[in-house]
Image 1 (cartoon, rainbow, N blue to C red):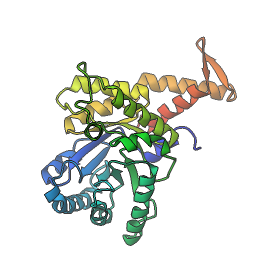
Image 2 (cartoon, one colour):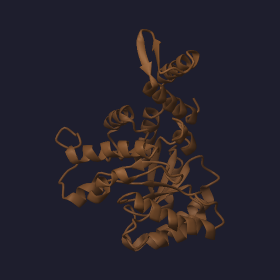
Image 3 (cartoon, rainbow, N blue to C red):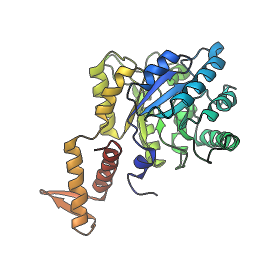
Image 4 (cartoon, one colour):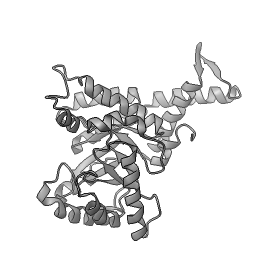
Length: 303
């Protein structure tokens, strides 16, 4: 197991992940200037079936033209492995050298391994290093995927795990994902919790799902703060206006950074024991690991 916080530093800064339709140059231009840490060029849900070829061409050209002009990581959400479109997506987009691929409707770690094998071939064909293209699977969009959440293992390809509610609701026949108070119902709370646990087991980042009411900034902020509290370190966005709210919520505050530094320094000063006391409160090794992870996120954010 790698040292706590290494997953954050290897992945780079990743707080906000903004979806942008791959078939719209105007929306791509706007998305790339929104300040998101990751731009997800979408070939799946936001692109009509008859527009897939056009989207591949527009997306590939745009990524080539903008890779050196943006500080954002560029991922492509391809069509899922059962769609029959995955190979065409990869053939068109891997030559443009995206930083990673988002895999929808992942039904377990075997799907990540299957995609990894496909990427290995495409990377070799395009002169890219083996493993250069990272993977973020969406792990809860089918019932089988949610039940297989525990199958994910540490992998150099993985840069995070995320979850989705809308596709899961369609798969199981749920009429809504939230109750009358705006809270997720039991199935979707389970999906959220399993994503945090699966990400921890796979030693990768836990990424929260989208908040679909993009005009409700207050509710988005509240959901971000709850997600950060529970162990998520990033959130996906569907609109550029959501990006600043997400970035702020997932950037450690100066107070949190100072406290984490105090915890780390206390362990160091005491000779790295199992337990230390700070201001009358006992801190053990889990507190130290949590502090180290927070400081890694702060370093990634330039704090």
